Image (cartoon, rainbow, N blue to C red; front, side):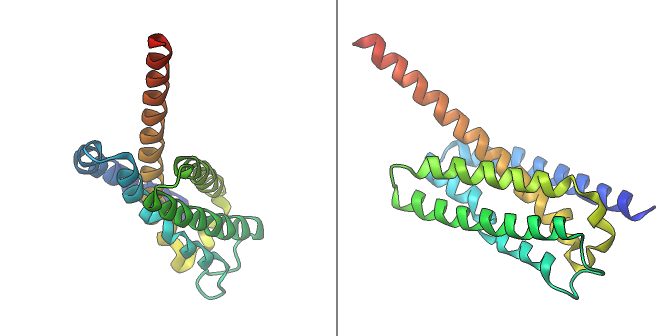
Length: 169
């Protein structure tokens, strides 16, 4: 098998396993939790996205990664991680705008991951950072999906409450 095939297979298998674990264990537990707690648990892995700065460290990659990939992936991860950390603090403190910050974090974080994934030319040079996209990124993608699902559910419930309130007035 060539490098790109191995990479793709590892990525897809990690995504499948993590999706099944989420469906079987995480989603049922999250459904019983208040939104602030559920989102906090889902955001925790994203608070470690500073690990993506490894793409800029000589010696961890076989050869310098294409600069567009290295810088956008590294700094996109750093920004996403900082937004995740801010979201955790806002949720914990129950700030009024916490859910808006979670929306911002999740849109920015998901866009960063999707942007990095479309740049397959970096794969042969990943070196020891190989495990970031083949293991860590699937965790982040699954949790982003769960975060978006919970945010949309909350938004729909909020709209329904507003409609009911207007109907009663």
